[in-house]
Length: 206
Figure 1 (cartoon, rainbow, N blue to C red):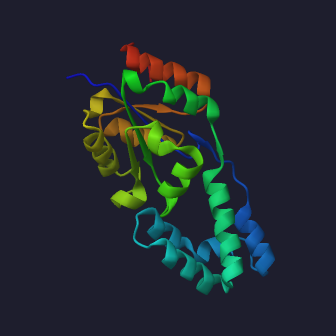
Figure 2: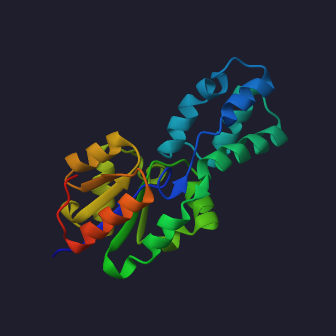
């Protein structure tokens, strides 16, 4: 059975997420050398990406490692999520919303614990696609080939029938190695054209 499927990344694709320098501002605020806050929390970021810690533990570790009080932790996490969520790529989201009758739709995202609730509340991604596969819920991050296998299994589609869209070249290369078709996101116009070609069964050079 040929069941066409489109799987998209979130950050840098469905969300516009430019570098904001928010962690640098915390280094300055706390009188730390550049990169110190990020370095102290590196293992927390890694654990949160695969669901090895919950949100309460993230807050506790931020407080302990940076010496922050409750109000400061709240501000720190608010800035983290502000940078993480970015702003919506409305043009692409609207296009994807019209695809459901034509194909299966999924999201495969390297994420952080808490992302599902916040992205559902702000952007409604839970109603945009058939399945959302978050790294913090499955315990593996792209470009691990297991992430692509899990996405295809959840969506009940064959890898070769899927087009995966991501803005990070290693993830695109890994998707192709896993048997999916893949497109490197650079702008909306080319991405829309690539998705339409995939759904129409047209040949594509990439």
